[in-house]
Length: 188
Image 1 (cartoon, helix red, strand yellow):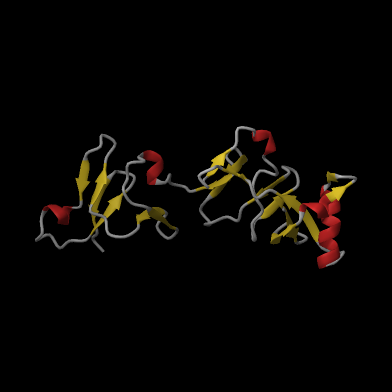
Image 2 (cartoon, rainbow, N blue to C red; image 1 turned 120 degrees about the horizontal axis):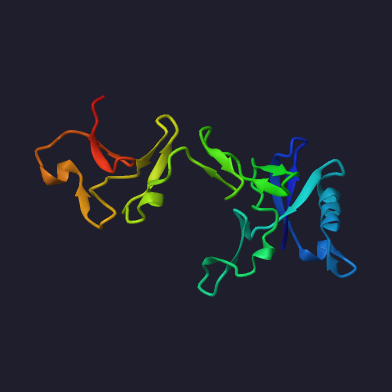
């Protein structure tokens, strides 16, 4: 199957469809323009289409290994158009690549990694031992822990417990400070 992205006149991705590989063949060889012509026959001659690769993310080509897990392929020459097209994302004709939609207004796009980067690194980037996940908080420009957090594992592997876990009479509210790597008392 081949994937094609429909674009508006501002190069924003409107939809991504899959068509059978046979619809791209010209003289027995896959040809993007033949696939585009097929898409136009389905959706109208005034539509704009670009081929995209489901297996390309952040400038890397992936495949599904024998365990069913997405893995980086050894042949990175197969990476196509930098990133799989996604609805709301954009086509950059000067870079010949699809840019995913910006997840938050504060994030900036990196052409090096071909990803959107937050203004503050994700806590897992600094310490992969963290036993919980975070959600980005655009209002405070911080990573907020998801769920109840009992402890954090520091870079030496030591557990830094939530203050209430050490003292059951402590009813104060605390928030994990992922920059300073400590529990901060919530005062408001």
